Length: 82
Image (cartoon, rainbow, N blue to C red; front, side):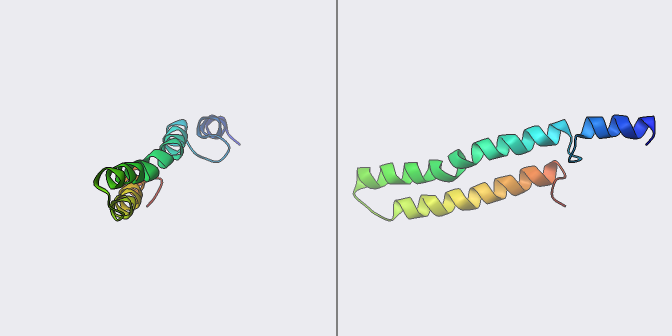
């Protein structure tokens, strides 16, 4: 192993992932519950307010689709997904 390879391995970490990519993946992992269940909570509160039962499902589907799209865009921007 050459000196350059050692520096690159040290910089990239054990899994070959850079520090920047690790922070992005960690941030996504921490934000997923809010992205998934935030719209569901809003839908539940609106259901309670208006006396309906279908808004929680609509907001749940919006939350799942929106989260999936956001995660894919962020991972594609950081080149973690080709």
